[in-house]
Every structure is written in C-alpha cells, then in structure tokens.
Image (cartoon, rainbow, N blue to C red; front, top):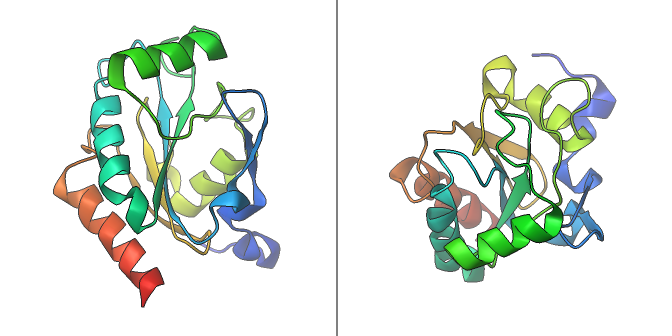
Length: 171
C-alpha cells in the first residue's frame, strides 16, 4: 500500500490521546517503549481481557512495554460510562494499573487521528471491528502489527511479538 511521504514519516509519537484524567497523553512520552494500544469496553464479552492486559503489562513493563487502554463506545454501546466510572470499574474489577485514555472514537470518519493513522498502517483488515482490537507500536513509534479482538493478550502470538519488539530496541 502506497503512503504519501508525509504519512510514511508519521509515527505514533506524533499523536496525543486524552488521558482518563482529562489531561493530554502524548504518545511521544512513551518513546523508547513498545506500545500495545487496545480499544476497550466495560460491558463487552471480551472485557475479562483487562485481566490478561494487566498481567502482560506487569510481566513486561520493566522490559519496555506500555499497555494503553483506549475505552470506546463505538461497538454495541458497550462503554457508556463516564471517565470516572470507567477508571473505577477497571481498577476495582481488574486491578488495572496501565495507562487509560478517556473514551475515544476508534472507527469511521470521526475516529481519533491515531486510529486513522494506525488503520492506514494496518490496512482494511487491520482496523478495529470490535472492542479489544490491539495495535503494536515499536519503541521508535512505528507501526509493527495488529491483533484481532479474539487474540489473547497473554497468548503466544502477542507475547512473541512484544518480546521481539522489545529485543529489537535493546540490541
């Protein structure tokens, strides 16, 4: 897929999400870390993935992984709560300590610019089709891969990709 020269030079570090606390969350603050960006929802059949996302974060955060949860109400209206309700739900039910963004649009014309960029990088099949879609971003901010909703955060596919991305940066 051909990208314009400007698009090819864009990295995840060029985007800023809004944190669950309402403050800017520039992805450039994670420069040098591998990012797993996951659109999440509190009322989804896949919501228990929060538990494995937390396990993945705890297992790899000291090696250079940052998991970023991006709550979204785009699929089935399964994230209806306020930022405070979402943060409380994640902490109380799953002990989430990884960074969370505020509720964000991740699909269509109104999608956040990061999601438009990542969708272009991933191609049509790699765009979020449901909650808990995952994007893996390298320490340099470049797009590495995407993983479907069904791909388990602690499964071998994601763990292998995370380990490879971390290792590529520590050489």
